Length: 45
Ligand SMILES: [Zn+2]
Image (cartoon, rainbow, N blue to C red; front, top):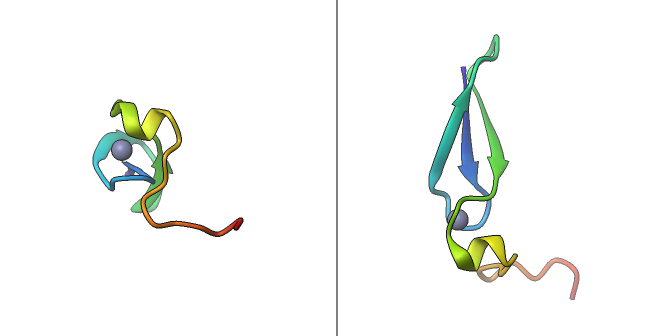
C-alpha cells in the first residue's frame, strides 16, 4: 500500500492500494499548505 503525505508539513493525508509500500506526496487541507506556502524550501530562488 502507499501512503500519501503532505509535501509541505508531512502530515498523513490518505492511503492508496499499491503493490509496493511507497510514499506519495500531496497536499493536505491546511490552509497554509493549500496556498502553496513552502517551509524553508527555496529551490526556485
Ligand atoms: Zn500540509
